[in-house]
Length: 470
Ligand code: NAD
Image (tube, rainbow, N blue to C red; front, side, top):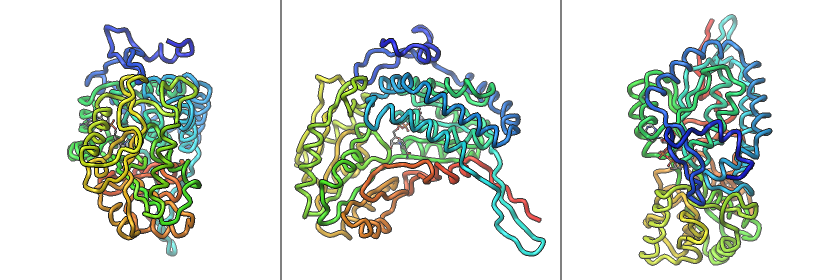
């Protein structure tokens, strides 16, 4: 184990006999043993959160914001150790838009939750009559997260919740508990007892959270299939829900686009975190006039972009995080090949790098109706689909049950923005894909979920709107 990985990792791991081994995503060696929390631990965490909530709420916004900013400072002070744990467990490299970037984003989003102003809103005024909407704490929030951006997404869930006076119980993905436990370890240096507890449990614990009467709100980020189960469970506790679910984001490159201008943003819009990103570009519609150039450009970049162990400073792409995801990606590409699609580059595992590495893959001459196009691949693979009519490309982009993000690419940003108005998704980026900003609301439409995160919209989502009317 590298000498830099000492204190935080030691504090969050348990002995072999008490814990569950967590593999390094690249090498599959055990990093450490994560605690295995039970349903009784969950009950205790909820009881502690409930007991701590009134006094945490009573501290007021200014004091909670001060504490959150202090936490952001501490994240920055421990950034390198957090990034190393994240890189090993999740697989994303330290460099590039990866582990160090994710830890940096944790501090940025924490500060944003601390500093965003949310005053009561006057919604009606006539003579002596007046109605105001005040945003009160909800109570206890349950935060259930995925394995792809485990630290950053947990911050998205817990920072606004805590800022608004709620207490929080966090359940990380069973694939990436150490990253989240490490983060929570830093946060708990600054928070009163019971305000924030991490429960490192499996899917059964996740299901118990969703249906537990002790929660007032569930913030969930994960797959659409699990999101559906959470909606069903919420019939029991009527917990409020924010559901950030799967995506199958389309990108449309308009006729005559100068490919060299968009190449860098396009590549990372697709391959960020080896494609394991909710709002990554997952199916690319390219106009005839630039189709071959786009395919060749992406393939050339894919062949050159260094992939390998995340702790190597040179690498910018890592492995698939887990075997299940590796099998999904491999299966979709093998199926596309069988159906006659052209594998321009990649299309196979890279065992010399480690068991779960899959080469950066560009697939051309493929159509809608192929599972690689219609389903979320969540890996380093892009199907590139040819079109000749923009209206038809918009129709195909919209012919999906998902609607998280989308993008339109063109030399003329105004022309792209016009096309964007016709696309059904929570965000449409122009000449970019997946760029997020803590002040700009983020969320999906259709089966990509409901509710928005970030900024004032995100604070409202973890509040009870209360009307005071006179
Ligand atoms: P997943 O749904 O398998 O698991 C997510 C979490 O839910 C885990 O912590 C898991 O333990 C828990 N869980 C499992 N069963 C549960 C149940 N019945 N009730 C409550 N919780 C349960 O998702 P994943 O594989 O970890 O993540 C990948 C998916 O997440 C992809 O589809 C991706 O697009 C999506 N995602 C979406 C966003 C977004 O912002 N929209 C962000 C990241 C990932």
